[in-house]
Length: 98
Image (cartoon, rainbow, N blue to C red; front, side, top):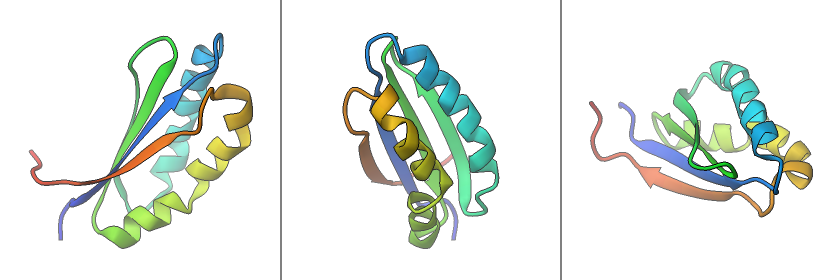
């Protein structure tokens, strides 16, 4: 089938919490590695307070399994302390891959 689905999550840290959010995301890599259906998982920093995650999947079932998995649960547990706003989560259709 190939990679055809993605997720983009943009995260805005509370003032002074950016480094903590970055460390949390680094730890999320281990959870992503355990997800069979997640093909790629990237955590990134855009500014001192803006971070994000981009994941790719082979099919909608894999994307839904990720959305119901351990990373969103973990983010929900620390969100009130680290995040200034709710995560901005967007679904994407992958149209080309190198």
